[in-house]
Length: 297
Length: 297
Image (tube, rainbow over all chains, first blue to last red; front, side, top):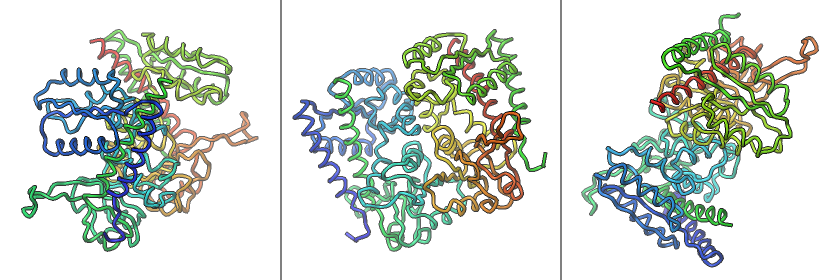
């Protein structure tokens, strides 16, 4: 691997090993096994593949996990019943509703039914608000994974100029709040750009770190980045590719070939932010289990 | 008044007159009078003066208001009892806990006790989260007032470069989220700067709109702004002034004399954002009353 490519897999493995040790200790000292319930509605192939990945990662670190699969045509009421029963099921410290849901379902309303103490995706309004108010409990795994990558790679954020391209509720906005806080791996000057931003190039050329979460391939090109800067690519799109067995390949939001020639560090897709997202989910489930122990004592 | 000075008082009056009309209609059609309960702990003179201002503004537009004053040494329990009783008191659609509280009290915990449906200051985690997630219910009055000023003055935010100086939970961070959303009076490219930002001047010189909420006089000087840009001053500090009866004068975060020579529009202190903050509180109380009517029907 080129020396300027950030190996997200390797860092995620390191983080996971650390969580595994902590879980082993929790098991030994408190006889507790962290548990994650995953709710999967319908059979979207990408969702299915994400859920399998999460199950595997949980198994690897000693998190008990169970997937509750329901048909695509499930009613709001039946899913809400499931959520409410999981809220009081002591085997599960975390509950995850795999998104996106089929169109007839109101995702926001269903997410709000999850007990905020078990909302390891950080998507309930209470957990989003705690982040905005500076006392984060569960931060969504992708922004958290990006921050952890920066910390583990010793990339200085303190006083750095960071440009985030993309203003989604799941990545861009929470990440901007996370990186603005006066903490380790943060304290940056943060700009958020989006589809209505004029002249993104002028902003990106002036940034020490560019984080791209636009969902569109080729959002960031070689001529748009400063020599020696750092680029984090949050995007994952499936592009048709007949040379692959699956028929597609994964690409990010960054033109990797161009940008990797210029920057000092860059995450690849796949193998960059993706593995970190899963590792931070494991971290949140472990955290949820520690909260429940604190409540019990 | 110079033609480039934004008359916050006049705009606030216009907004208040509009709210007054709506409240009159609500009274006539639904026999409902919006009510605001204000909790005032101790006798901080600035808090006292803010509360008097809010009472007066409520009276002017037909909002029923009552101030619950408690001594500075009140216990957490006694205040929480008051909040819980106000949560179920149907006379009040909004509850406001005047900050700052005496040091022995945990403000965050007390705020979380307010029913989010009555949290007209938008300070509970649920309401902060709804803003971050893009479905705002109650937005804190100061950020909302800044946005309304921009709208009423026809200052184009769509695609504009906005710099916010200050990252507080009450102003800078919620304002950044508000101005990033794809809505009227928003859709801007937003940068948040703070005490760890290097070379703020470079950023402010490059911005179409600079909003200063640092809490420090002279944060923004003449040489730091672009000709023709717009400056909004959120700061209010009391400076000793022996020529005044009160012994002090109010100053903002902007060096008004210098900056007003260069920009196309600027808010004064006092008479800029301050009156808008009170007007937006009235707006939030009216909104709370409409929510309770919707629930009842």
